[in-house]
Length: 113
DNA sequence: AGGGTGACGATCA
DNA sequence: ATGATCGCCACCC
Image (cartoon, rainbow, N blue to C red):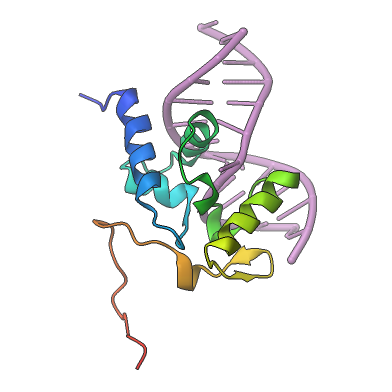
């Protein structure tokens, strides 16, 4: 049986809440982490409807802010307040993208010597 | 049932 | 880099 739609929302919220302070993630990544690849638009839906989520830590692919106008400004401010570094209009994902447990980690992880 | 809507994403000109 | 297009998926009239 297919997963109940409710699960989708629950899973997505849960995934969003896992992103720690100072880290960020993307709509697509959240969807995958929640077990619904391709449901990035649903992630947006959840973010818009529910409160109490670290909404500012969720960005578009490539670390780009997808909000418009004042909201975009606020998101950037909030992130910078957490120590997130921007490179032009995008967040430096190399440094701040959160790795969900259970998700395939890149091999070739070399620690800073 | 049918059509419109998103804080999307990947691709191409 | 920017804008257009198409594919996606659940939700709401």
